[in-house]
Amino acid sequence: MRQARFYAPGDVRMLEVPIPEPGPGEVLVKVEVALVCGTDAKTFRRGHPLLLETSPAPFGHEYCGTIVEVGAGVERFYRGHRVTSANSAPCGHCFFCRRDQASLCEHLQPLLNGAYADYLLVPANIVAVNMLHVPEDMPSERAALVEPLACVLKGLEVGAVGPGMTVGVVGLGPIGLMMVYAATRRGARVIAVERNPHKLEAARALGAQATVDSRSVDDAVQAVRDHTEEGRGVDVAIEAVGRPEVWDFAVGITRRGGVVNLFGGCEEGSVACIDTYRLHYEELCLTAAFHHTPRHVRMAMDVLDRPDFPCDVLITHRYNLEDVVTPLRVMNKEIPAEGFIKAAVIP
Image 1 (cartoon, helix red, strand yellow):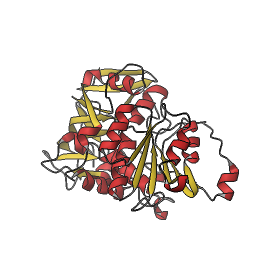
Image 2 (image 1 turned 45 degrees about the horizontal axis):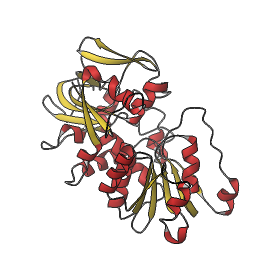
Image 3 (image 1 turned 60 degrees about the vertical axis):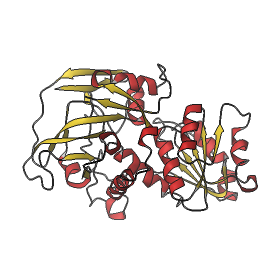
Image 4 (image 1 turned 135 degrees about the vertical axis):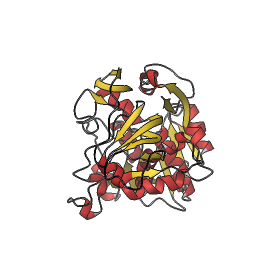
């Protein structure tokens, strides 16, 4: 079979490798589609301390496919079932799992990697905890969004986003746009901030009540505040870029007593400088949301089954498996692709 492998930053190669055989608890899936995510693009650019601990390594983790073989002891799943899954599964018994912080589980390994291939071997821990049946009428591209959407839904619990709140979403990649969609469906008023006009247009289509083009105004922080009650700032700011200077921007648009969700993951070793006066005297709450839990994975599948879920807005480009490096380079702004938001790779 064909399989993309990550060797080093900027070096992903397509190889011919044997089709794996599933061991106990494992499942072999014929990949119908794999989606390219922002984490993949960052990994392609600089590596990743958690997803790819060794190299060369199989690559890609958002997928939908059909089971072609199951290992001994697998229950609930059989040949011919269409499935998707998260890219990890918590153990359920470590220090963090016992404290209902499953996204910080100390035993998430082995992670799922290798969706950029003809076949994908799903680890036993994920099959047991975080693999889901795909509804018969659900398109593969939609089902493959379950993992990133699960992260979004977990993120929206930070600050208890809900009716009557004003939420600022900074950065409108696929994650940011799903934040816009999900927050508006929870009754929040969303202000979307981005430099790309096409993505701002997508945010409006998904329900954003106001948008700010951060390239076209002299003071983007003030522009966001101008859209809020009495110019005070947003109740919850969600940073969905993963750059320290954008963390600072998210703090700047948040009202006194508000919540800043530092959702975007920065490069290891990055440092952000925060005004301590605002933190203390204005009672700002700085927090973050990482990864997902089994509860959010199942919530995500329910959301994906809604008729209004904006899959066509999010997935804008499609590539053959041999061209998987192209969307990674597009996302890293090495090459252009008009109207690009998220790509599907189809073996």
